[in-house]
Amino acid sequence: MLPSRTIGRSQGQSEACIRDNHLIISGNHEENQDYNQGSARVRERRYGAFSRTIPLPHNVKTDDTQAKFDQGVLEVRVPKTEVTEGKKITIQ
Image 1 (cartoon, rainbow, N blue to C red):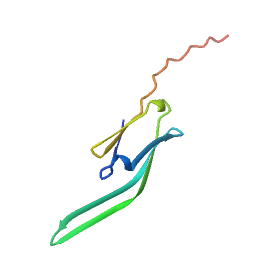
Image 2 (image 1 turned 45 degrees about the vertical axis):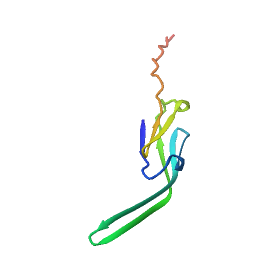
Image 3 (image 1 turned 90 degrees about the vertical axis):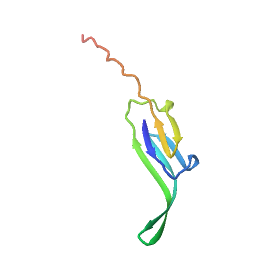
Image 4 (image 1 turned 90 degrees about the horizontal axis):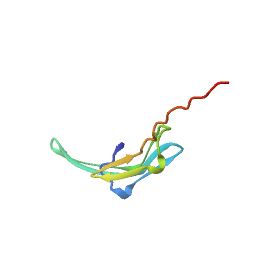
């Protein structure tokens, strides 16, 4: 499971894909913040495109990947492949 903080973004503002055994999360970010600092009222606005690339281990099933967006958190589940026993080779 790979949780990603995406507060301030809605489900349609983020995309996830797997390419060359890398998970790529991208989208647009827009966040407005108002607060008081002493006697001044401050309003900040942050916006822009973002992208994060996360290398995946080789023992994952990329075809069975699932993603869920809930309360500002994008959760991506990439299941591992089953561990296979080695095969004994007879040396002649």
